[in-house]
Length: 238
Image (cartoon, rainbow, N blue to C red):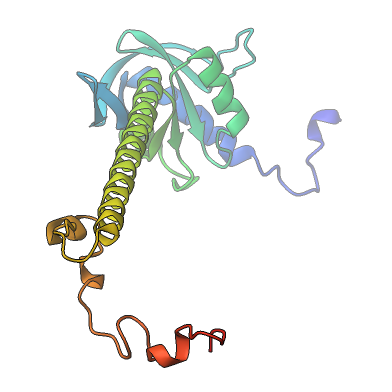
């Protein structure tokens, strides 16, 4: 008969997981308290990490389904809003499901029971589901708002840093030009007049002080004597 189709073949591998799922869902019928995981949030427009919290839940239904094609394992109410709860044993929420939750702004938590022995007793399953098992937020509007604030703050900081760097670079170029102009004007004056050259503090300000007044081999700043490079009448440069 059709309902004995598993006879003489390997047992259905999804059996233990199905039982664990069912017992996990039944945990909410016996105890309405649930531990929600910590999450990123805002407190007076400041980014904070809100701690995990034990909340009272109102059990609504199993296998909730709606026109948005989102089918959570559990549908409860906590802290005044509807909450989807996913029980993950071997299959976890994928990016497509998380995106649908985000699009419809439905808070959802995933409880990880992958480490729970398949032959666990009911009390152990209840304890894991409601309190001890690892859990994470698949979506929460508060997390989205905090991340948006974080991104906005980062963008503002990058823009401010860029503005300051551009201003510093412009100031540096201006001081270099002023110093170069002062030197050109000083060198253009005939010998015997007072030279007005940039002070050492100005050279230090533009990072050139260490290059002034250094001893170099040869004549002045040349490594070869004038006889090698100077121009003589009747002959070209040597």
